[in-house]
Figure 1 (cartoon, rainbow, N blue to C red):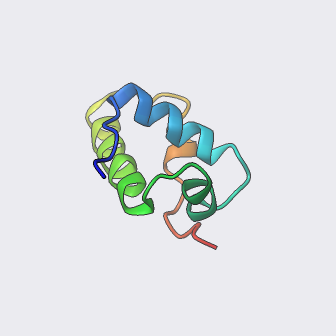
Figure 2: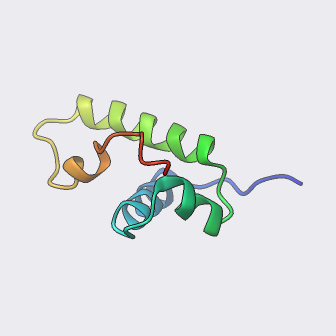
Figure 3: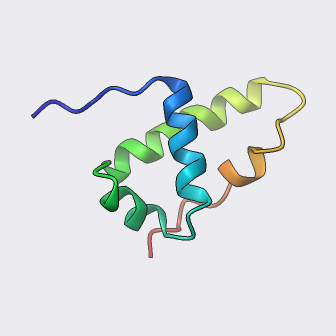
Amino acid sequence: MKTQRRTADEQYQLIMECRSSGLSDYQWCTEHNINPGTFYNWVKRLRKKLVMMSPLPQDAAIISQPLNRML
């Protein structure tokens, strides 16, 4: 089964939803049928994009949380 492609804006919204949910990244991804590896690729790409921007947006602190939230 082919997975659904998400735009960069959709990826950002999903990352923000996950990080504000109170769940671990793994738990949230499982509940939303998103492969955790795919999710972390989105985070990685967004971080790279944010590094190129100046000044950093206020939401950068949430996105920059450690990737070891897979509890």
